[in-house]
Length: 51
Image (cartoon, rainbow, N blue to C red; front, top):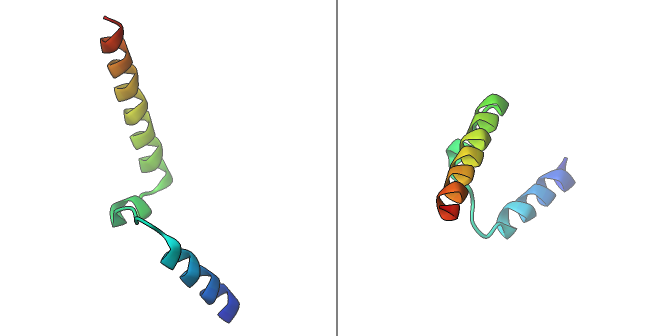
């Protein structure tokens, strides 16, 4: 248990920038929905660039 705690503490300390807490608390369906929104936004921006 101590080794696991030490490992996770070292990984946490090595993080350069943490994500907002809301990202860590999202359910899998919310993550999927956000991914879909990002993909749609990216596709729309690419379509605008082509015009």
